[in-house]
Amino acid sequence: LLWVGRGLPPEVASHFGVAGDANSKMSRGGFVVSMGAAMVLLPLLVWVGAGWAMKRGKLNIPDADYWLAESRRPATERYLYRQITWLCIGMTTLMGWIVWLVSVANAGAPAHPVLDSRLATLGVGVFMAAVTAWAVTLSVRFRRLDA
Image (cartoon, rainbow, N blue to C red; front, side, top):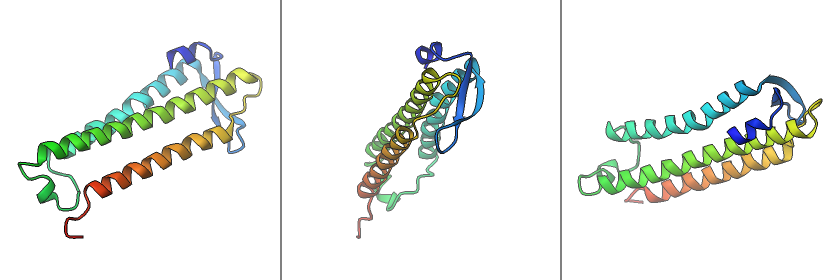
């Protein structure tokens, strides 16, 4: 982000309409700080929140008594932390993709930046497909034992 930020103009087109046309700007510093905060704090909030839920027994999984029994709890928590870590990596990757697209839009035509909405849609689509696969993986792993 810092590397990309150095190449941005002093005023960055930071919000784009559906067609990709810029409709809002902010300072380069504001953009770098806000995107940096989002790239770090949002995944961190998800990761810490999941850990908080695990430690307080707030997990909503089928057959929780089975999966959280004393003999299985450590393995279950390791698995969940690993899965949450992958989700957080995906979130950070998507935000990095968006930052890169914004930087390309601002570099291409500084007077009238246009975001490549096809690539933005592709990035969001890949993320949503990955989240769907992630959710299916969790569902299969913690499926009801009597099913």
